[in-house]
Amino acid sequence: MYNGTPLEEFINAWTTLIPAILILCTGWIHNASAGELENDLSALTQRLIDDISGEESPRIAVLPLEGSSEMLRKAGRGTAEYILALLVQDPRFTVVDRKHYTKALEELALSQSGVIDETEALEVGKFLSAQYLITGGVSDVLGRVMINVRVIRTETAEIVSASSLSARSEQLMAFSREILGEKTQLSAYVFRSALVSGWGQLYAGKTTRGILSSSLFLGGAGVTAYMFIRTNQKKTTYDNFVQQRTTVSGEEQLRQEFHDQTGMDAKANQQAFNDYLRTENARHYSQYQSQLQNSIIALSVTGGVWALNLVDAAVAGRQKRREIVRFFAWSTGESTRAGLAIAF
Image (cartoon, rainbow, N blue to C red; front, side):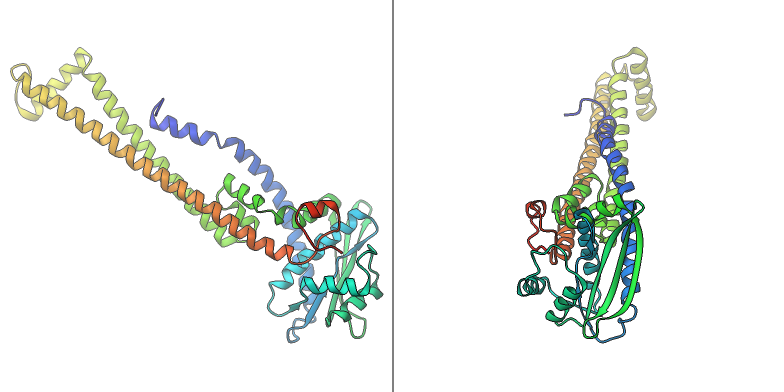
């Protein structure tokens, strides 16, 4: 039931989204920082593999980057996880499957050590029959984190390429938590798309789907807004007509309109005038009701687009989660609670 005009109801409904929009703006700032680090890591990975990309489907193993503290080791595992995700998507390379990592650690009795030195890393690489091994470390240098990564040819222990980048400590830790924590939870994607259509898909890296979902929803919202404005205009016209019949000046104006349309005097033809009033009242009300129905249909379609956007966000999140969880995470109670089964 409408307590105010349709336009007022529409405006009231949409203004409830303002707090969510403020939350979204904060999230965008955070994502911009994370996106910058993702771009830097993507560039670092590309520099690492440039020298071996010409070979025919080389087999690559990636180990978590080591650190001198648990915080740095977690950052190293998150960084390695992201590098793995990038390599898996590149058809030029064959990446060792996660179950083989687990078997290698069990066979070589390294899974409880917490730290894998370069000699042990080469053992892992050879055990996995990997031609190349990506390894490295994360260190704290004057408040910033230095990420050093290198590619080693396992047969000769030769360092084929090396690359590094510097990042803020809090930026890298937030990125690592996101990669191994938040980005493995479907709720993270659905919640974002519930706030703003398409945001969850963009968060999952599905840019085209995110833009399409956002465009469809914004288009539907625009049409719905226009329809409710038209409904408000029709209701105002109807209300004005009803109000006009209750005043002397208004009735005189209606009598004049009746005379202009029919050529008859309203007082002398009272029954015809009353029929005219009923007909006009029904016409205005019918136009208002018809426009209201169209507005409800537009709102329903927009709601359907929003619901489909949530479903697609969940699908995109599941696809992204498969890319991430297929490798490794840190061996802590926190990771177990997050549903991450494999640990180094």
